[in-house]
Image (cartoon, rainbow, N blue to C red; front, side):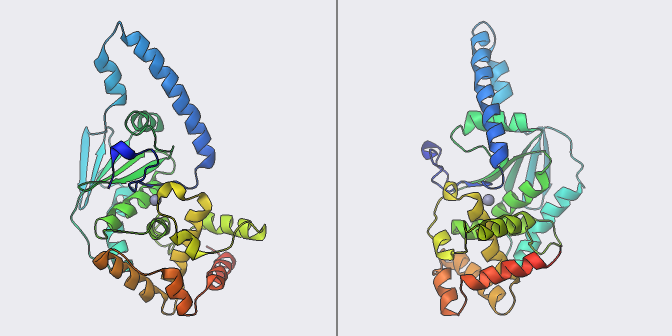
Length: 298
Ligand SMILES: [Zn+2]
């Protein structure tokens, strides 16, 4: 559960969108550096000014408007139509995940704090979670809350599908291995009708495989515990294994849902890599799945 006193490496399972944002990260680091310079100047000015002005700019979550959509509570400071198609999609995702993974649903609220723009989001994160890596969105879980932080930008649909998927999953499964959790979120972040096909991951894995920089190894992913251990390729590979399990045919989907059931009921499962090898499934099969997807058009 989230411990604010030990967030140096976000050890208590901050589930973050760590992938796909390397170039943006540099840009955001610059923004955050500028922000601190701005804050220093603002603080200096405040010495003859007013504290509440500064706190108001940096210290508040969105909360003027509140939209309740089944399990989701969307908090914003700007107006979104209640029948917005993105909100409909996020609401429907609850049943999509439940159906695909043979899971029950929960009524535990998932609070989504949706900032109007990147600046207000990063200002808030820099003040409240200064040691968190720069990301477009976060999912935070504590003993009593499930929270998503994001801002209304060009990739908001993908970001919210990803983070809200974490929310739905964690509301019914007490303990998820990090690769399993991220693999599912990457699977469900693509629009409905894509059957979990994540083209950017297909492209990245092919590129790295052709240059000898990567090959699938589920046992390596299984050793990871914390979100900040995962590089972009690890997100992509986690997605590949999950897509292989859920869409690979044969007995794989029922194998996957059985693992989900064990995680839900017992909070743990055996090593999937070992179980797969015992069933005659190896990394070569995952690679063949990637090749088949590559040949298959969208
Ligand atoms: Zn994630």
